[in-house]
Length: 304
Image 1 (spheres, helix red, strand yellow):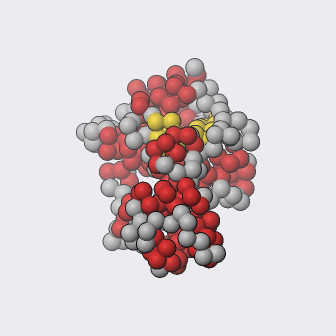
Image 2 (tube, helix red, strand yellow):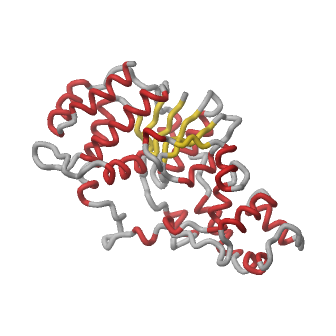
Image 3 (cartoon, helix red, strand yellow):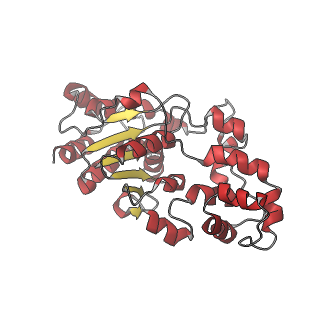
């Protein structure tokens, strides 16, 4: 089984979930590092993947999405033009990279793309060989679920010990939409966390009804073009007609890329190692950053 980690989602969760008082001997906070390592250890222990990839953001706000919809994540832009990652977390990101590399866990981001897109591409490829588990706190990735794959999302909203396993049936039951329709649903109702305004006046129920009736935003727009009236809630046609430019732009923004053409992705060795790639470097990192306990827990999980 292939496990794909939305690593930024996990280390942000670790940063806010583990006390910042957890520090290295030199006083550097390492709460996100320790929390992330413990999360991976728990996932490996509980789910027993034989392949695992730590997917990264090479670009948290890709140009192609901003060009389509300038409001995309605009509220997260810091004064210096970067993202609003807290300084104590920013300082831990290189440590995370070093530890993952010393362990020998596959770690990859692709220039111009978010971790979501790396996950989407690897999930589609991986499903041809067997089951795929996507670990994330981001509902956007619900659009990748595929019971035929099978591709499941292990949703972390309740924590790593209480994962919600989301397939097509679970997404349909929770949102009242076709199992893989979450991207279209989010496009219509909007998502403030991503700066996605949605269609004014279209809420959760109307969005669900439209996607259930027409299958997708594309199908809904085709029905509008054909002059159909059945299946549109009262007043919805006017609202949708007035939002055509937004709907066209949002399709580019919301849709997870599933066909990144990148040589590093193509040759990625995603096998979960039984032993660390660089034991000496790992010992040095564990000593320097006060990571002995979580590193040992992950090594035990990998070996088991």
